[in-house]
Image (cartoon, rainbow, N blue to C red; front, side, top):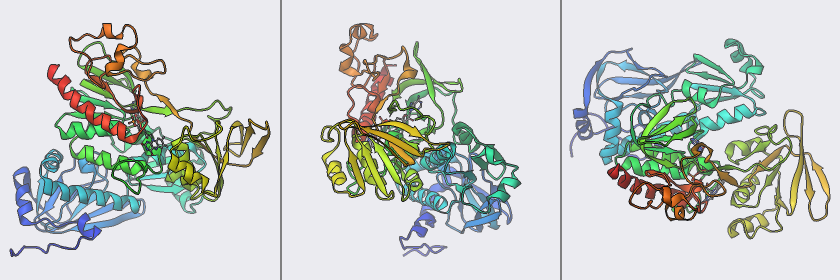
Length: 559
Ligand SMILES: Cc1cc2nc3c(=O)[nH]c(=O)nc-3n(C[C@H](O)[C@H](O)[C@H](O)COP(=O)(O)OP(=O)(O)OC[C@H]3O[C@@H](n4cnc5c(N)ncnc54)[C@H](O)[C@@H]3O)c2cc1C
């Protein structure tokens, strides 16, 4: 048995896996792609907010990792010989979250972010050690609220909810201060000269104060998209990071394509708003949409896919190749091929005042954050599909009572049988068939809901402050105007379906026929819920994302 110059922990406890000690053989594999750096005590190697921070592997000496905060430094860990720095920002290319200060002089190996990313994709053993450690470290930061961002807001503010969802759906560690309940927040507001009318307020890196920022301003402040080169012609741009787009990103990047994903909000799509997906292969006890998305993002980034968030794609320049994907700030990114994975958006029933109460009592997703807002209170779920059924069952765990309002006379045509059974056996859920909402009332937030029973004609008003709308979705294709053929509901036609509407087949420019999932524009593919004939399932969206990448290879070969 070889004698190591430092102790290697053998127990498989989470702390050991988060902060493993590399063996000399593993370190030797890192040497050719790193440079040797001598460090002295007190030297600061990186600060929160720094971009393109390298990974350090300690050969000797010590490095303390701390989180500078509003009330001083919080210690996170001290690395010793054989240990290494870094967390998920190293893979995603985002800005650093912590400060690294040399505690004891010594020698460190310095590995650039690019070298690290290619090592993780190629060296299975080291890739697994680094990825597991980075994921566990990120989870520790999230669970201790140790991020470089403080969000101060109110549970009655729609904009607070928007920013909280953005941070949590991106798995970004942060501290949330609820101004409605926190006693010490006035001191913070005074320190940054913030008025209550500025809420929500975000403090990035303890320096920059954003007053009621847009999601894009928050993303820019945190450097979410800082390392993305917009001038580079990409092999593939994937528009939308729901299950289909994320699957395409994983397969494209793992097969060596230079792939960029652009997402208008946070990755996860509709599935990200699902509290529990129970019918996705391989998860017998179910998985929340956010957890599934978080795993997929990490996997895609591990293989080298780049992810741009908080940017809306507003147009496709489709007159010549390379095509150009135009963003909401007017910039255009060139791409040899495009996968459209923009899914569908919630249908909003025609109820007066609906917009006024969005985020103030009206919600379109039922995740952990919303469930906390209506703890021990009555809620209404509108809709008769699987998403409504899941939401009702999930909310019944925290809410006092769930009123389920359905327009039709039964659920059997629209909902899976397992959910119908669960609802029928749940005493906290009260079904109202053939019932529709007629009015919403309240001062600044939802306070009363009126509904009518279409069979008896009886109208009643209820003091309920939380309404979940789950009434289906329509395709997000407005940005494709004039570029690809759509069906009469706005879904994208692909493959053989393109023969159906008169004229489309005759405008196809190539000698070969469109491939499966290919739109009326060569090299542009559509996958998932945005595609005509889709089956509204996570598994099929993921499958189509994978198939489309296979077809992209063929298209790139002929371009
Ligand atoms: C609450 C709920 C529960 C569900 N439960 C299940 C379930 O249990 N099992 C199951 O199989 N299916 C379930 N579904 C259906 C499943 O989530 C969808 O079929 C799946 O998410 C479709 O994936 P997608 O990638 O095609 O589209 P989406 O999930 O709709 O994702 C599209 C993404 O594209 C982004 N986007 C849109 N336009 C643009 C633009 N112009 N620029 C940039 N980005 C853009 C959106 O923000 C979004 O993130 C559920 C759906 C909901 C709403």
